Length: 243
Image (cartoon, rainbow, N blue to C red):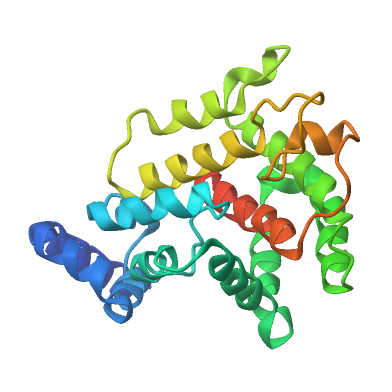
């Protein structure tokens, strides 16, 4: 145990010394990135700066409805935004459902014992079960309520009558920085802004899943498998920020 701790410290110190060089290597080389991440603590990992290309990819994916997925590398994300919106959605559907839902089950295991999610654990378990049984529609309103509660708990807005969840996200990342944590909060803020945007019931159905239309019973239940996975994916990103 002491040897591992000493080794980790030495690696971190050397990484800090050569940070400008290592930053580019981490962004460009997935294999090296994964090995380094295993030897380093999460706080140090989140202090690394990202290239403009990686930040732009995070932004574009969030606009498309996909917050930062913790198992994908930043080069993966750059490749994804080169695809069409439909191709991006198809990638994530395949990613989460292939090999008997292996990636989705990994997310489930990760979230199962999180204190921040304890009050929603039973509901979240039913969401995962329902999705695997091809009942993805029922997960949409349930996951929306969980996400709203989890984001609200990250800020003082719980005491206000109407919490603006985007404001909570912005308060957590402050300015649009280029470290991993800033990129994660920025990604979540863009996603939440689309999800919770004002959409008059007197106008046409929003093109993106909308919290107000769904939870007020105004939307037709034609949501896709990708829509359900967007919410599972976002919940994992948010939970990673709050751990």
